[in-house]
Amino acid sequence: MEDKIIHIAVVPSAGYSHLFPILQFSKRLVDLYPSFQITCLIPTLGSPKSASKSFLETLPPNITCNFLPPVNPNDLPQGSDIGAQIQLTVTHSLPSIHHALKSLTSRTPSLVALIVDTFAAEALDFAKEFNLLSYVYFPIAATTVSLSFYMPKLDEETSCEYRDLPGPIKVPGCVPLHGKDLYTPAQDRSSQVYRLMLKRIKRFFLTDGVFVNSFLEMETGPIRALSEGKYPDVYAVGPIVQTVGGDDSNWLECVDWLDTQKPCSVLFVCFGSGGTLSQEQMNELALGLELSGHKFLWVVRPPSNEANAAYLAWKNEIDPLQFLPSGFLERTKDQGLVVPLWAPQVKVLSHGSVGGFLSHCGWNSTLESVMQGVPLISWPLFAEQRMNAVLISEGLKVGLRPKVNENDLVERKEVAEVIKRVMEGEEGVEFRQRMKELKEAATIALKEDGSSTKTLSEVILKWKNLA
Image 1 (cartoon, rainbow, N blue to C red):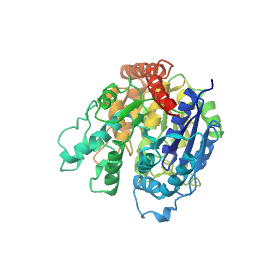
Image 2: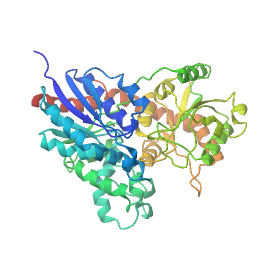
Image 3: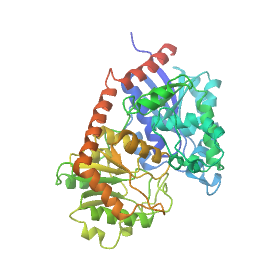
Image 4: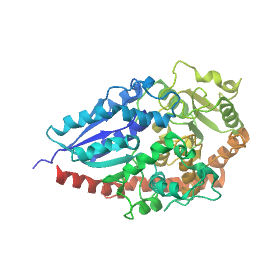
């Protein structure tokens, strides 16, 4: 007897960093249950990025992606925070999402469930209308999810800005967090972004469940705290990460250079798909890399005073190398390789010569580092990255976080110092050993009888019975 076809709809939010994780999750579903039929309805702000289109070409045929009519950036409030832009893009796309879901529910096989990205929570209202089970996919740490569900209570109990609290915030099951390390939307309680966040969180409580891209062995405390019955069903299904990447000239240049280096000798420096540094910070990082004396592979972008300037787009026509300190490339030509704009991160991290990763600590990058067993230097920039940095350095103890001065700048001597501590000596050995153990636990979690696979299989069985 053939397996039943299970049809589900997936709604990401604008931006590659939100589209990519939920589609990776969709691929994981298809891998476990090939009879899935998944329709992805993609809100867009302006024209879709080429990276998004390239990734869609790698998807299996039973995952169908439909770009919704693009929202004109001019229709959004000028000067909006990027978080608000992403949220409002979904808001403007709601009529298109409703129309698409109505059409899908009239087809055979009919939809069983709706899964949305965290910024697409408004679409959850349609699940009840069309008699669908509703879920949220969190492409973030369970620690961050725990804070989100704790946030309404924290909001009621706190009168000041969280960063002004005298002591750490004790979120159930989590490593203590200082208010200044909470995610960006919580840093200004009077802002539109904060109000939108609280509104989203209240919708999360009404879902049939939430998926978290983490695994029990990595975040035991927060995952167990989330499973105590106060919240919707929580399913830890990770780590779900990219395992391959496209080949291009950057990769050929990177691998040729990495092949000439000693094992675990190279520090990979990359701030994800959205992170940017100020000109002053870019200078300090460059000079710190040089001062450390360690080999490095650095993915460089043009500087910006906005830490998330490349999140939705960046100007490819600008050569970022022109912003490096005078003489830097010549002085470090035998020490490092500087690559403009992009490098195939997963392939670089998997190379035997890479022994450390200086990262913005986006959750995708963090999990990719875990899967390759590479210790981290945590350099958070925006969103929930400071929380991830606390988890990495204080909770899991698989890396270090540089100290900033009174101007929120990491100085060159501090850069050099943390590089040396991670890349050499007894402390570096301990980081690598803990990360090796975490890598092994992650691999086991994804096996047929692993914690994450069994958890996801339970949900699939539930859907199968309803199909």
